[in-house]
Image 1 (cartoon, rainbow, N blue to C red):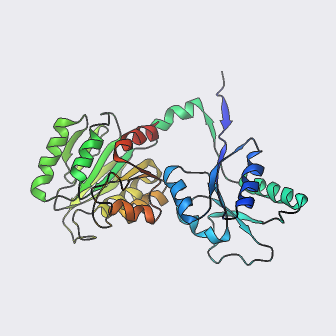
Image 2 (cartoon, rainbow, N blue to C red):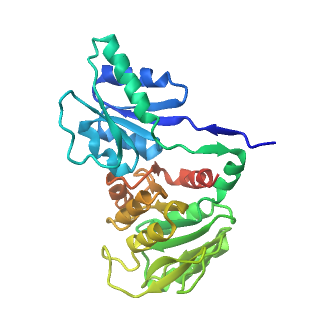
Image 3 (cartoon, helix red, strand yellow):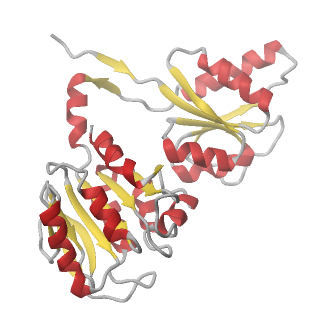
Length: 325
């Protein structure tokens, strides 16, 4: 029997501050059976809230929201007649469509058909049951960063995770005398086999590696596996180890095969690293304000567009397992 193949519906987010035009787009595009309109945002703040919870395949927006390209999602840009294109129009845009005269049925129809044509240009792969079976191994590496309040947050997260996950690498801002003790606690009280990392460690599934309290930790490729390097160096964002150092190396080494998680902590360490991971195609999660001891690091990451899913701590393990599937 041959594989059953089908094309996922193209998921769309509409960002438009004109209510009537937004409704026209949602109803018009939603008629096409190959497309699913997730919802509408009226401004950048609402768009960011949508994007923290879900990842559409395409964004439809007007030129005032062209900076949504930072989310690395293809955009169909709506422009007024004779309007010059924004200077930042680049390869992140599928193209432009001229806004309609909403009093003209013919022009609205022209507009909707043009939108559908542009949206259908987004690359969407074929999916099969066999491909789905392989999707559980797509993520090969999990990187986690935390600071103030992070030891308890990490314990809470890891104790909810099973032992068979891909390897986990962790930077927790902690004095060197305590990093080994913390690793031993996690090893004894969770299903994840946890140790303080040392240079040369080859990352194994079901294992977690915590950066020593006085050394940066980087990840590199070694054939089809990942290798840890720990080294003394200047503080980055005021810290050694630095979450940014770890996550930027993971973005380079693992790209879309990684998952990044930024937990509670003071300052901004990890925000740029998590953004580098998201740009490279990795999935990214940030802890929300309500459950963070200090909503600093995940807040900055969220504000710069690094966070794909912003969640309370108690829901992060569930999201990790969902993304593994």
